[in-house]
Image 1 (cartoon, one colour):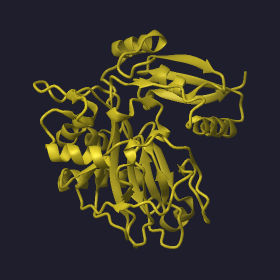
Image 2: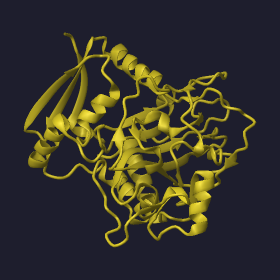
Image 3: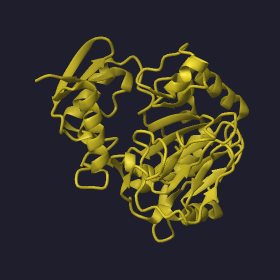
Length: 363
């Protein structure tokens, strides 16, 4: 079983090469110890989902144990929020290019608004942008993250979401889902999402909606929702979701931050206003975790869909991983198109996205 922080074989050799060649440590996949004096101790029988490091009160720990989320008010300063907002605007205008980031846009709006925030609804995997990645290193964020992951923290997945006005359709609605559906690493109890509102979020502009207590459920089968209108690619939802399930709308002000478990069922609504609803988030995990092979699990269909997307885009039979090592050399590894996505992630873990190119080659 492959550990997140302790690899062997080819991955370990690549790590060694990177350490010798890199001018700096890759930021997004760096271990971040945050408690030199106070160790994180799990208390069997009392608390399963939180660790005792002196940060959370007993009441806060019990709330997370019971509900799967914890909301902390005014955790991120207005100054930091404004810096993140300005960087997002620069990315929208293409004044800044973020290596490896996925920028999701509403192409239908480009002719009307051009390169502006009115077109871009998500910047994903922004770990190579130093300004946005500061969010993942804020001491006040990591202080709480450690309560769930332990002291050795890894930033696994980053997003800045700009929910666009969508009053007459469901284009930017994410159906109720569990985040673990997208992650091939475990254990789930040592993963947490930190989600910060960059402006007021409520039912009118599509705030987060959670089903308290559902973090104790197993990972459920996901797929595309059966509703009228457009659905976004890879915006999967729980297939047997009951619309009558009791929900909580998380009304949040700018700087408020919610931490939640990857099995917590949640989603977000439509932005019915004429403005935007911005948030910034990161999924963190303990470096003592491990990867899994998702074959024969509820995540197998997602892996298959990703493989089909790659194959359709390039229309070629083999997937080559080309790793650029700090401008000095290249290492090329060829995979079968049926190769596990988790295996590729295992092999490449620790290499920043900006140093990787995925491309398909004819055999």
